[in-house]
Image (cartoon, rainbow, N blue to C red; front, side, top):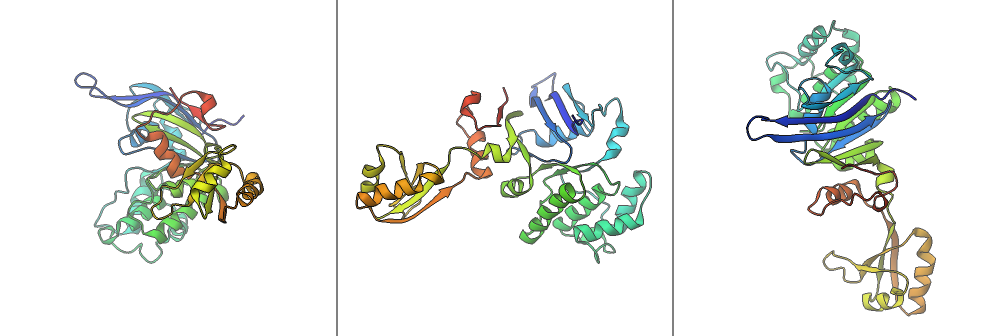
Length: 324
């Protein structure tokens, strides 16, 4: 079995231990395997950036440890030469040009590779802007330059903290492709945080959702969202449909305004013919029926909302892991 790229064991961070201690990260465990795009998600203040900073040895853990390529960066800091990161926004010298900032970063890591820098500027879409002073860059351009800087040393692990901050929709789409290319074209492992959950859903293989310092659920996206399927149905009369279906299926009325005759039922796509026949036999007009899948955003809100997440493994989707 391959060594995990990242593995945390009881990783914990407490701020202000002597007076008014605050538990920011609470004994978290997770593994990131080689070649994965791993999404690390949570509300603001959940402990995401603190976790990243401990992984990168930018902040000491109060308890536990984070291993990178099987090594503890506190004992073997050279393992971090295999890591490129963009944490809490890109920071550069504003009066230097983009190109000169890349030189500074490259030289700080043992040498500047001009050919690679040119390739990376092409990769992130900044060709033609590298001779402009960074103070004139938009936030999105700074993020792009930050990604180029993170990749200068050709790292095996790329850590991106909110990489789409400040980007317009076009830039966000390009970033999605950047991340895919890093993993699937160039064989990098990507550890990603983002508030754009639809983007995470389209790029990540596996996610952990963290809330109040704890990982509340972790698993492959396809497994987390593979809950009992629902069908959405539109009919001529909701009441007649409820009567026709109530013996076998639970009818859930739509909460969308001005759609009184649309509802959902817990059923699979294979149930569609039976449902339609039952409705037609009871003289209910059927205008449409289609499967509905839960989005990652829906799931995120469900597990980080006011309602407590069930910790009984049998109540979770297949592949999801509850964390105490």
